[in-house]
Length: 347
Image 1 (tube, rainbow, N blue to C red):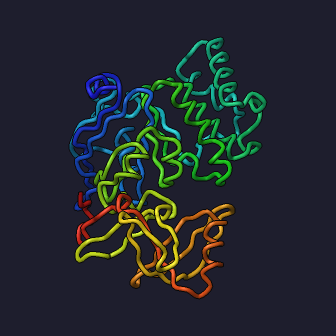
Image 2 (image 1 turned 90 degrees about the horizontal axis):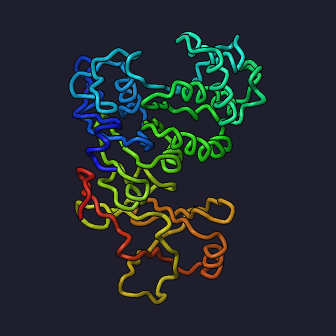
């Protein structure tokens, strides 16, 4: 999908800004979302994710910039005229209505013929595996089922754009994991652009085609999960993606060396190493078991360092070492360098 074709049929944000009094919530945001693409807005609380979504939907006024959807400028249009569907964290279902009535109400208000309403409701119920729930009230549904109903209602609108604001944050971790792949397939099948707001990096990396990382209203980087993880533009992006988080070691004046925990290895001091390896003395702190893997915590020059390893291999090395000194080692090709003062990447 080229930028020009995206501009004709997808979503384009051009120099989008929003200010409230002296506070800048968004600053010159430029983004494109192609038809059928899922873009995740990722960042900490207060970074501008939900503000961006509300500006696109028309719920918040834009201070400057332009919003285009399907080739038309919608910046000044009221929300009802934007052909946008939103799915909220709170589900926003009518508690006194059945699932089927929650779904059909919007179509009825738009005076869609009854036969068409019944067919469309049945279609989305089947798509989202809700056939057996059509006559239940929201209180009789699980959290995952309520989220499916909210999504089904959005799908019925057949909008030009889907906006999802942390729709799975009320669900437990196991259910979020189960729904992630299912939701990705359903959203892709619509062919419409999707903007998905989340603070959960696992959700963004597992669901989205591309991720836009925001900090204090500024876009830090946009790209695939692989691009952001392996080639971050700055220290903030490097630190925000990855679990365990990246290690930052002050090994050189004015500079931080970033090392992913999986790129570090434990070795005995004095053991053979090749010329592309770097070794530093380290003191073991404690172990954090994760089933077949383990996070070992170390101290290197007054800095805490995490190492992610296979549980059996690290246990064997620690047992063999007894009280002998240990090192942490890594290959130079895995180093990421950042300016200590600004966090900018040194390439």
